[in-house]
Amino acid sequence: MTPTATATEVSEVKSLIESRWASPKGEQHSIVNPANGEIVAMLNYATASDVDRSARAAHKAFLSWREVPVVDRVQPLYRFKTLLEKHADEIATLLTTENGKVFPDALAEVKRAIQMVEVACGMPSLMMGDSLNDVARGIDCRTIRQPIGVCAGITPFNFPAMVPLWMYPFAIATGNTFLLKPSEKVPLSPTRMAELFIEAGIPEGVFQLVHGGREVVEAFIAHPLIKAISFVGSSPIAKLVYKEGAAQGKRVQALGGAKNHLVVMPDADLPKTVDAILSSSFGAAGERCLAGSVLVPVGDVAEPLLNLLIERANALRFGDGLEPGMNVGPVIGADHRKKIISYIEKGEAEGAILLCDGRTNLAHTNPAGSFLGPTIFDHVKPTMTIAREEIFGPVLSVIRANSLDEAIDLVNSSDFGNTTTIYTQSGKSAREYQSRIEVGMVGVNMAVSAPMAFFPFAGWKNSFFGDIHAHGKDAVWFYTEQKVLMSRWF
Ligand code: NAD
Picture 1 (cartoon, rainbow, N blue to C red):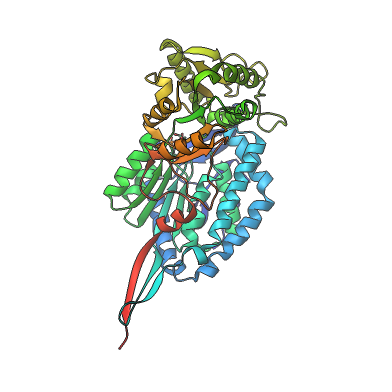
Picture 2: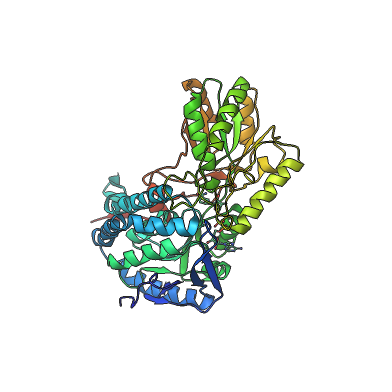
């Protein structure tokens, strides 16, 4: 059955349950544009009973979808890719409206999302197993990969178009069916993308969209028909979902928060390094899990680096992300802004020196929006709160180090291990850093080391709970069970 109405033509964002656009009966929340504080849509949360109906429909669909040859399963994904390309500007506009990031960033996110679909279209090759004849006399052995059933995805507010696509194109191409719960703060772009997936011809029950909050997540974890959960969000919730999901016998991958270090060696190319730091730490208002939040200048590079960084940070243009020429938009909302400000206050109270105060340089922004300018603290100690905890805003803490060894020890002492970058022109320093650092994604002279769709994505330590990472070949392994077949013929 085809949904009877599009979900975003009215201001209420609907869920897609049992292949119908529905208004669940849970709490109602407003979706606010963080650039101006205006309500742009209403969202009704789904309940545990909506999850139950969706999971049953997904299970029913799974029984036939897994029998569809993989070459046919990827056909809707090819059409989805074309539709996403055609509607990229429209999706990016929705994304900027609900999340705040500037339009070029939003468009880049949509393009990254499309690459996920492209990679998943290669599933006929990616899913192949191994085989070896005559493993013993007359005995042949091969491995095959089979889908696991109904899978669920829970995603964060900061990449509403891309992160869901780390999950469902791979899960569905491998023969599973999928329930997606996007962040309740940013439901517009994932819903528009769901409409396009339906238009691309994805069969009934194979993909459903269950909007909501904690109740939906708890119902996913408890539901016996849901076999695997992919989570991306903050570390405390990632840990909880991993623990509770595993206790229910589910396969779980849970990507968490971050505290990413940028190490600058004395031989770094300063102008290019400053460009990269600005983009890493203040791009998307610091709301990326790959954002640099601790800057570690090594030796005497600190003074010239900070002088240039402050000059360039003060020149960044903050404003509504739909206005041309803006470098940075608002943070996600007023509550989050308050939380970031409380971290800035803690930094001051704990004795760090404020070089650049994001609370004050906002003269040209809409006061009803949730704007914060770049904030830079110097002389931060590793024990301070702003050095240890994820702030998830445009706040950069500077911890000076005397040597590469000291910088490596500092980074390795963090509870998190999502990404890190070293800036240097020395191959030796770069190689040593990449080898000794206890972090999942490591860059050299990069702004944001985001692995492309065909490589895996995940951090270490408190930035990731699970074994198999997101997208790339890992996604094929996560969404399939491996079976070994041995045969002997007389
Ligand atoms: P969040 O943890 O608040 O929410 C993520 C998801 O969990 C949402 O769908 C939300 O509805 C749900 N959720 C929230 N509280 C819950 C609860 N008590 N029980 C069950 N479910 C709950 O994260 P966020 O604020 O939306 O996103 C920002 C966080 O995501 C940051 O910590 C960031 O580092 C992280 N993130 C990590 C990656 C990565 O690849 N490691 C990527 C993007 C974002």
